[in-house]
Length: 272
Ligand SMILES: [Zn+2]
Image (cartoon, rainbow, N blue to C red; front, side, top):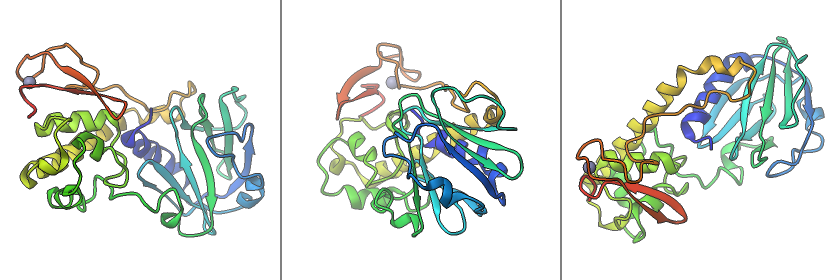
């Protein structure tokens, strides 16, 4: 599933092709994504100039001068850049945005949990975005902030940092990895962690996400390859998916528990 680093890399990958371009044509082959693609979107988008591409949480926002496209990659979505629209779309490729520079941005999503929506109001106020917590890479996320928001939260810390209202875009992989780097057990009660340790956790979240973006950045050329598996990357994880394998620090077998229906991995010695 695309997590925040993949979404950021997608944003960085498509941005140079989109900026300043006029939308020539928008083609939908299947509007049934998580929410249906608006019926008249091809008319709305015709001849609009793209001013900016940004990201909020796991949403990509394309500023089309008079409104914004809001894109979510869902469980299996990806965007890639084609140098012409000649290449025939496969059955999982649901829409194309053709630009006046001859490029086409094509969306592929086998499971169709993604979204493509339009708003002509401030996208930050859109119902999907308005309640999102701070961006994990911004200074707003720090130990003090976490300490404040978690003071009355007695559920496990991992569930809290994966809650988009607390901090946005920390998915399962990065929650597990960040907690390992911070030495905090995923099951630890959120309101029983000191501000110092939460500072360590916010640093670990930033570091883990930044590192993933760096690693993924080297696969940016994939955005204009043809296999549709754009830019996603495998990394070496410290705990994620390593049940029973030795901890890289102390050799103790990594333990797996289920929290909020998600697999959680940790070292019983290094994480307390
Ligand atoms: Zn260990």
